[in-house]
Image (cartoon, rainbow, N blue to C red; front, side, top):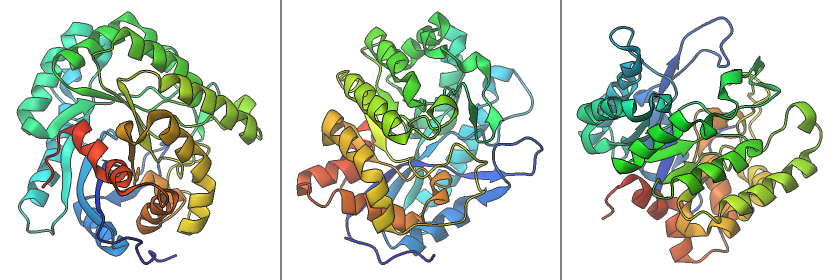
Length: 335
């Protein structure tokens, strides 16, 4: 399906969750081969017709170094994203500042020893480097067709992880967290333990749909909603509204049946409205989560769906949801 005619095409948008990658063929990979580098990003943005002014690059295990100390390997991803950001900032590729801010990765289990790694990220990207995300999503069942690493279970409660997260707070950096809804209580405890750390919950805290939750969507949604409301009581936690098009039950890239924005809005509305009610627009931001969310709809349809869901909100609330909360979170100056 081609991209739709954009709703409110002049509304400025900051997309706070956009990946760049080149997935090469690899046996046992949860992702099928795919290229989504700067040229493909620019084509996607132009085809959508939406006024996306900036994007935030979020780690996706790309271009890691293959030599030197292992803890510094993720710095290669920051170098990669920063290169794309420098190209976009030249103005030669259009008005959107792609990868204007960077959320990379670091092993927080290093505890206080993660500081040199964070300093290395900052040395490569300067003010563009705003925080990190590391793998945390865990299910007792499979994700993307493969078993989860058992070492991820309970990781947010590990004292070493919390020490590393405290270093983030001390350096005025944020922590993006993607976890499943069954891990939200663990995330709430982390937020309580580190009230000075800005935590961004990605993908509305993905409702579990595998294992014992398979075929129990209504029950899973009710359980998810209760945990979301409890988590939102922590003022240092924000939420990204998106990621609902991603299918955690299949390899990334397998689905090609795209839905219209009307269909997406109907499907996503209960989750997004619950999050906005719990967190308020002051701590909520729409995200595309592309390319993974292309499993459900085009980039243009995704943003149209968000605009349909937000139609009844005030102009001030819309501005927060579509750009201002993201701008404050990732320190992006607005005109």
